[in-house]
Length: 102
Figure 1 (cartoon, helix red, strand yellow):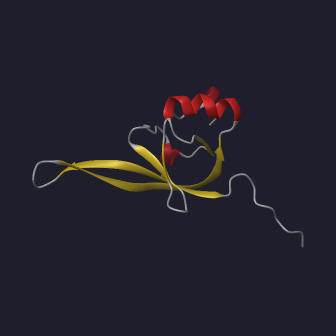
Figure 2 (cartoon, rainbow, N blue to C red):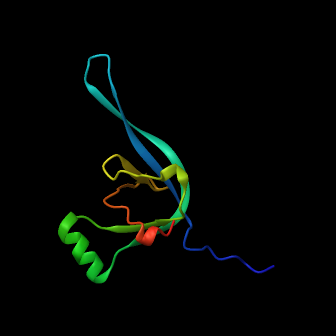
């Protein structure tokens, strides 16, 4: 039987949403809640894309690609993040849906 090679979507990504509630003391508390676990690709940007993004963010930019899923429809970059399997947390900066390819 031929050996299967892993595809581009080989990383398990945990999409988390920040849920905010008022505590008993009246102050707002935030908690990250997992909303969807999806397989996708994680690429570190290189070349001109890297320098353009690095100049704006002052951080190492990644490109995450996943298949369309209703559970993450309408992501708000300031309220969502992605947790990688190794514990790395990635903040979402933008969510392009080019030509509504979903």
